[in-house]
Length: 277
Image (tube, rainbow, N blue to C red; front, side, top):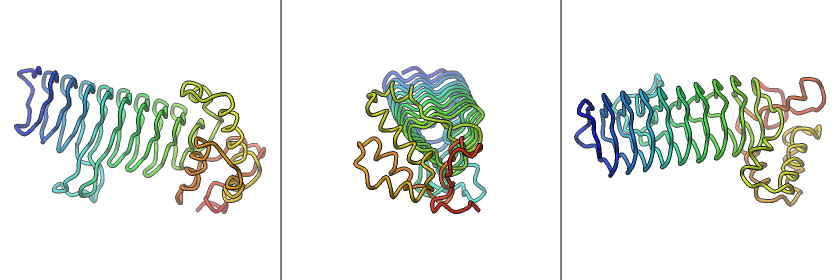
């Protein structure tokens, strides 16, 4: 391992083989740093941080700092857990969990571009790309292979589904189902066809996803009616996952089809099909 002489490393830190710790890095609390991880200059690890193998932590990144939660107590034992093969670019911030024994979790092989912010208790899957200056509020969940556009923002507790894609500078305070493209403020613009192709979805499977999308967003049924109709159909596992996600929508509900702005379809945002509070 290589540790620059200007780095400050907590004495209880566990460091794997071939780890590189750059100039003026500060590891303030107990950290576990997996084999082959590189931490660039001026990065800070605070509190309990567990980092897997082969990660890159960019210049000035801050991982494990106190959450921005007024109810948080400094004596709370919480942490950040990061898997293997992630790239976390410069000036990104990842805050620790806000409750006792909780964690903010980043899976494997994700790419967090410069200035990304993950608030307390965020859960990131695998192979996710988050473009520059995206802001994720507390408890946000991001599914595998999602792509979040630059400067996009996500309200607390929002879920973004598998292979979803969001437009740059978009904003979401409602859940975005798998395979769709999110745009502007809480709108769905269509399906992420390119993402599904890259993920190996066959033409037949993509067609089935399109049928499911049309049932949910273009059939004129409200959310409850669409889910009831979907339960009568024998879907592939990938499409069943789409409707399972929809069923799990909480009070905030799902984003709305873009076409409703022009009266092309009826789709209410809330789970029971009523008006939103």
